Amino acid sequence: MSQNYFPHQRNGTVLSDAQYQALRTAFREVDEEKQGAIDSSLVPNLVGKLLGRQVTRNNNLIFYNTTKNGVVKFSDFVAIMSEAMAETTNWGRLQTEVKGYVGIDTIQEQIRKKALKRGFEFNIMVVGSSGLGKSTLVNTLFKAKVSRRSCLQSEKDPAVIIPKTVEVQSISHVIEENGVRLKLTVTDTPGFGDHINNENCWLPILEYINEQYEKYLSEEINVSRKKQIPDSRVHVCLYFIAPTGHGLKPLDIEFMKRLDKVVNVVPIIAKADTLTIEEREHFKARIKQALNEAGISTYPMKELETDEEDENINSRIRDQMPFAVVGSDKSHQVDGKEVLGRLTNWGLIEVENHNHCEFSNLRDMLIRTHMQDLKDVTHCIHYENFRFERLNARRKIDKGEDQESRC
Image (cartoon, rainbow, N blue to C red; front, side, top):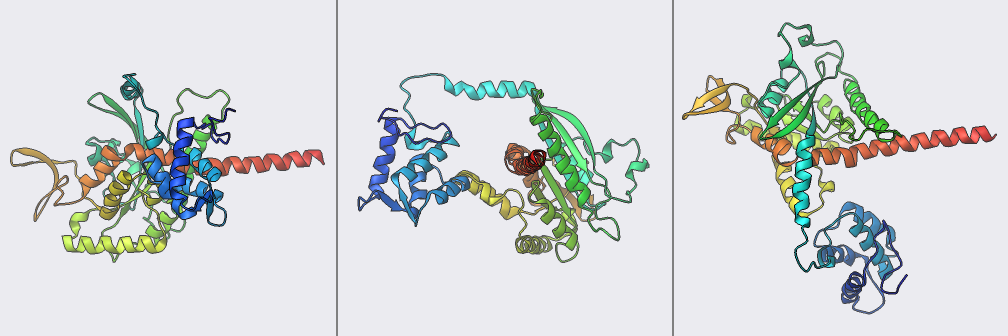
């Protein structure tokens, strides 16, 4: 290879002469003693300065793996930068200047058109004991009768009766708004937490989530696979907390501890209109404390943030959680406008009024700001963890069978 290119490369990233010189210049500015090595603590800021963004968790792992005795040589620094550049297009000071109009700005519109033709998918699971308004809340979120229960012919339908064991039941709809089609799948879990003995009642739910990962994996590794793999993986699990007692119940903690590593868990306080504002704030504080003490990771997870903008947005969401919500699909007239709300002896609880409850905060996160991120985290984190464990287990089995056949 020409001396204009650094021979070390990873993930197919080859540095041009200009990029290589930019790295060398930045490294020399920090290497004040001209020893050809710098203190490892300086590397994250140096990477961030060059790329114009903070170092991700993955970059940190690469960084620590290449650090020796707290010192980083220039060759190690180039390896770290090559890995960081391979996983992003945010190259900051290392970008190549374009001298004239090319048209790459039209890519976004091309993607938008193809995506609109294909449509979108979103899969939501609701978990909680009966009577917490799960069906009503889902209907309120999408302003349509999309919950499983609301699609039954009659409230006397046998499916409404609480089952003896936890069941997992799904129903799908296609809804459209302003030319955007969404295939929405709502998964309900009747029977959860409704019995005297609720031991292991989370198990059917965990099995269902893993079954959807298994379906996707089977299609993905199939020799003749579909052009677009149907996605039945659960993108978010709304966990309904009863607005009673002093905080989380043992079952609440057990469920979220079992599932927070396999699905995006969003805890919400159901029927928040039964609490005064002061009671609501105290209740939320106790829940946050319990989640923290139990080591439960709820969505959005801090360790997955990749830049300052994400960090600021998600920090505000975490401050608001768990969302204290009220659901209602009934309209009422307020100052000549129709609003969704619940009429009580004390007045009208407006569902989308920030002063009345936090429903709009939940809706905005799920649909208007974080729907794609929920899907991305499901695919890149939860599914990837499942995929790694499953394929790794298969390799071990295959290796064992191969050794037996040689004996």
